[in-house]
Figure (tube, rainbow, N blue to C red):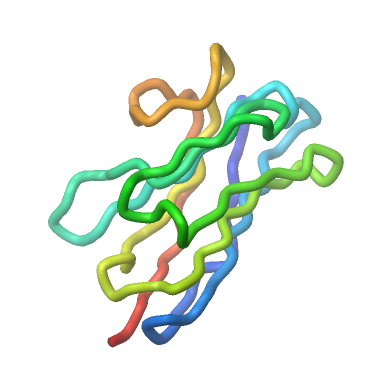
Amino acid sequence: QVQLVESGGGLVQAGGSLRLSCAPSGRTFGSYNMGWFRQAPGKEREFVAAISLNGAQSLYADSVRGRFTISRDNAKNTQYLQMNSLKPEDTAVYYCAARRLYGPAMDAPLYDYWGQGTQVTVSS
């Protein structure tokens, strides 16, 4: 069982930046493809970004490409989501997810483990 803990959420003005972190429990972080999803009030959970085991491959939703950067540091057992040029429509609860097999993915059901989420609020 992998437990994921997100941190770094908060309130920021439009145009600002935040960096989210996700620190899975255990020593097998390097065995998991990692992802970020978000869910705004009244909306379905949506894909944000994903990264492969060794960080060589990354995927982004069109809505965040060029503004958000996903990365990981396997030595620190942590993955990050750097969010720049934030917009009010980025307001959501952001979830960290881990997937054991095959590679980074954009579909939420393909992920095995989920964090509790961290709130990101962007004011206009």
